[in-house]
Length: 225
Image 1 (tube, helix red, strand yellow):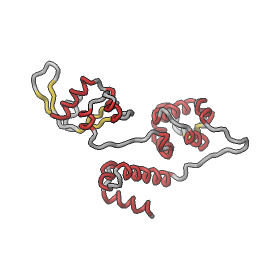
Image 2 (tube, rainbow, N blue to C red):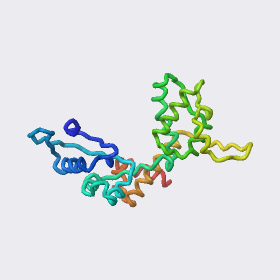
Image 3 (cartoon, helix red, strand yellow):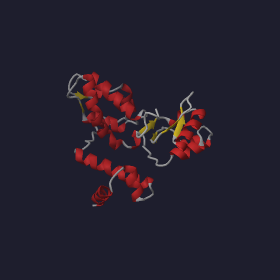
């Protein structure tokens, strides 16, 4: 895989699951930017960018002796913390809008949309399975739906059990609002989190977000207004 990625990027998902023996070999490749195939005699040099991901606390794994400390510092050059879905519920509407076209294509239902009632349930749910769970629930609901709108009756029963009881006759339904406002709020949230992660260092925040300086300061000015 490293050989194929030469000149590009390689993504290593769930890096913490890598056995200790392979962690040592990976460290060698990252340090020397070269390796030798099993049974080979020729050194192969690679020029690659490494992106790793994990859903665990790597620093804790290092302290417990379950992940190599030297490898941790080698891969921990720029860190991006992606909070779980329960901590960024403002993203649910945008994620659903992104996921639905794939589901429409997969199920053959070209006009499937979610109702405000369903969106309200999504906002109250805790999402232990994060985005994968959201995608699975939307696909199931699309299959169950007879018409073009996904209703609460099309959702799994456990979603209803998670909702707090409300007095009879009172139903709280929050509209997500215009799309431009949702995008604005989501973008501002990302900038705010990047500034917090960089301890107020704007140059570092721009690097985390991958934004150009002019766009970053333009957005920052808009949100302050």
